[in-house]
Amino acid sequence: MSEHQYLRLVSDILEKGDQRHDRTGVGTLSLFGAMMRFDLSKGRIPILTTKKVSYRLAIREMLWFLSGDTNIRPLVEQGVSIWSDWPLARYQAETGALLSKKEFEAKILADTEFAKKWGDLGPVYGRQWRRWQGSDGQVYDQIATLIETLKSNPSSRRMLFHGWNVAELKDMALPPCHMVYQYHVTSDGRLNSLLYQRSADVFLGLPFNLVGAAALQAMLADQAGLALGDLVWTGGDVHIYRNHIDQMKEQLAREPRAFPRLELTRHPNSITDYKIEDFAITGYDPHPPIKGAVAV
Ligand SMILES: Nc1nc(=O)c2c([nH]1)NC[C@@H]1CN(c3ccc(C(=O)N[C@@H](CCC(=O)O)C(=O)O)cc3)CN21
Ligand SMILES: O=c1ccn([C@H]2C[C@H](O)[C@@H](COP(=O)(O)O)O2)c(=O)[nH]1
Image 1: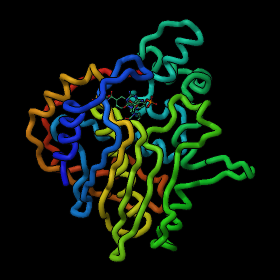
Image 2: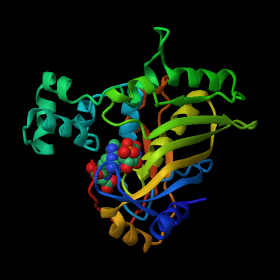
Image 3: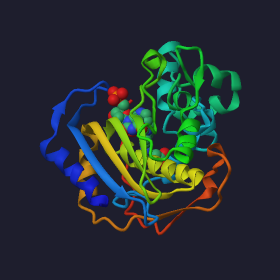
């Protein structure tokens, strides 16, 4: 029930992973189907300790999803660059301009019209979670419905939200990876969650996804007046990019430490009112960071 699960998954992939070509051209080692379970009930949050994880970026990303926004501008304003490569690639492909990521981000910040035109990722996570456009003409806020159900009918088996809106996939910069989140309330009032991730970049993406899912679970429990239970993570195509193999071996050689604690220091009335300052993480004592390039 700890970081050893992640490290075991890494060594399984390195040992038994299928060598595959992938969309990005980088190539991966991949296994299909994996599960991990983290106990959040004692106040611990799964932020990996075998490398330093920039967990604030992952929480900021989750708050951005919850805001319903799909433009990178508010992320860039907060110093979060993890989504900038995809709009930049589109800008370069469509205009032939050769800007660095830094130059592109500076233009996104300086020019609102430019940001509107080039900074949007299409109808990705935030759009589907908060404003799913139904074929009946109605707009559905899946997060609001989830919180209502957690409060009014916690034994429901229908508490989930989904990002895979088939009709809108073609307009997304990337189709959702962490695509279904399901919730469950135990008879003694603990909130469990299960995240299904169809595709997982085990070195760069997965550590962020675990932090995001745990932060979201903590906010939902706070909104619904519930305690925390387990976070179950399950992955489909679970892969290590070829240019991350050395980094993963280095990480495997490190001894994991205890996960840090998460406490929400404020209890806003709405899921959209949380701020990064509300997340108090204590006791995080990671090994040094390990760098790796993201496959675009
Ligand atoms: N190939 C790929 N992997 C991903 O994990 C991923 C995508 N693409 N596309 C969409 C988002 C963007 N995500 C990303 C992108 C970059 C980092 C990254 O570079 N992380 C570094 C440094 C972050 C920083 O400090 O700025 C890390 O060491 O965690 C992480 C997640 C997750 N997703
Ligand atoms: O939150 C995220 C977002 C993306 N990823 C990874 C998983 C894959 O390596 C790429 C997406 O490429 P696809 O070809 O669409 O699968 O991004 C992640 O791990 N976590």
